[in-house]
Length: 356
Image (cartoon, rainbow, N blue to C red; front, side):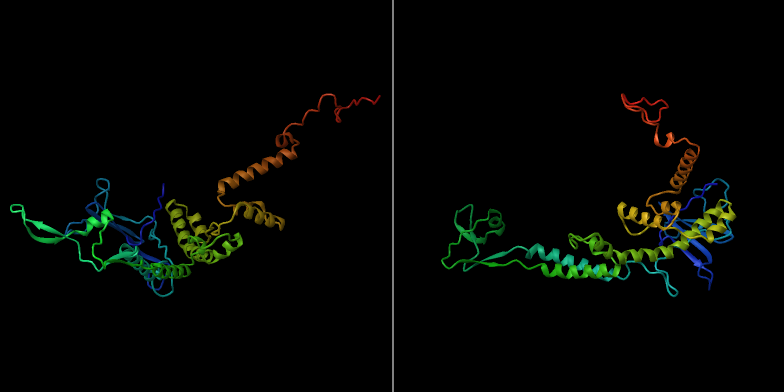
């Protein structure tokens, strides 16, 4: 029977535990919306309840019919006998709810966003030098009566024309040009940089991940800077491992394999190395482990990207090679024996010509 494993957003799913039992699930609820209909599925160890309701105001929850076969009941028994909804808590605690990775740095990030908005606003009007005309009246033009041709008044000339033409006549004798220097926006940038460094320290983000922080640094230095992030990932692996192990146990139960489910409950999750290493570093480490007697199978499992199927294929190839050597079929391993050159005697021949 095919089994489907899906991941749900924490805003659409919730798990309730038995009071006093942190790992024994009492019920699980999953909700979602499809166009103009809301759906909800409640999982208990004995039953699965499925409801739906229209999103219009005043819609009531009723047994689910959408997506079900004709005559299929909306509420069915739970064939697993356990709640098939597993929580993946982040930074789980003995007291209180799990905490998000970004909960502690949200105020700092909001401050960075605010400072950046202020910088953009200031750069719009203060980033360039401003000039002022001193000792001169504002340019005006005469208003002429079209019928009589007489001047009836005057009005200010729009300054947009002078700005676009980049030309201005100073007719007054005492007129001069003054300039206001551009504002120094580095003050905003310095505060933003310090805030970003605080965010990096709290989230254990390596400086090499921030542009321009590290230049011409040795690989050992980069690895040292990533030590905090690697330790953080190792911590998350330890917490997420138990939940993922429970997911695989449920998959075995759904397949009807009670023995495999019991074995998975006592197993452990094997994670890939969270620290990035080059092929040369991995090869050097494997050679050193081989020198102290670590079996080949254990070394193969440490190679990044190697699947269990590839390891089984390597075992078969090694067995075939050993069988070929024991059977005397060396040619299958190293190829046929090369033929001697013309004019040179074959050292393996029975009749070797005597020297003259």
